Amino acid sequence: MENMTAINLATCPTELLALDANAPTLWPVLLRKVGVTVSKGEHIEDKRAWILRNFGVDDLSNRLAVQQTREHGGPQDDLARAMIWRHVAEASSPGETIADITAQNMYLLNAFIVAKTKRFASPLDSLRSEGGPKLPLCQNAKCPNGPARVPSSRAKYCSKSCRNVVSRRDGFVKAVRTAKITPLKAA
Image (cartoon, rainbow, N blue to C red; front, side, top):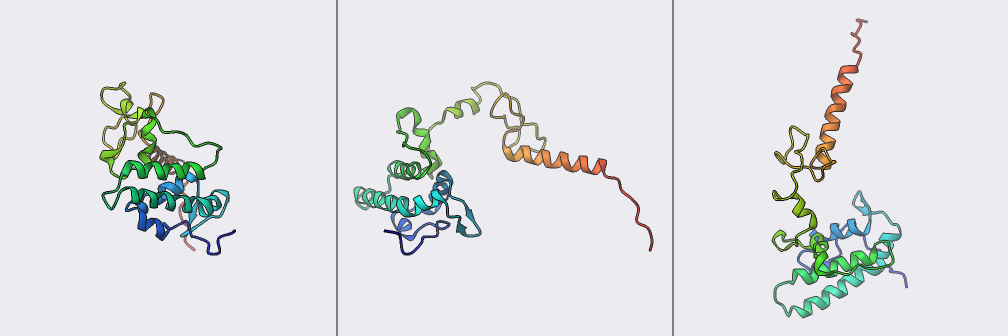
């Protein structure tokens, strides 16, 4: 049976706000992982949004309610809740299967863990550390991260934003150099 009242997925549903203290922070992450597009305060209705609205929100609220009873009014178990949020995101995403969480890939839960101190180590963290391979520094002279190392030996910039800043600046300088300025004539 079709839902009579359509939920606006651009904002976190109220039943989720009551069940999880981190719901306002995790809801946009869930939308991004599922592939729901939000524009001008409304979600764009497509297959992913329909699945999340009709199945995912109910599944998420039921699983969070069960988790809340397991916690017996105590503090929230961030790991268990991250597994729930990730499971619903995987179930609402394109694809046929939901990947299992093992000890080797616990870092996949990091997107749904709010406290940075509780996050798991990623395989990329070892590359970013000082003990990893010596990667070149970011080519952006005004990099906001300071002398940041790039993510791979093939990259020139530490992030997409650094690359965009440099390409915009270079494009502007090139446009100024090649612009033919004609003097204004008096009328």
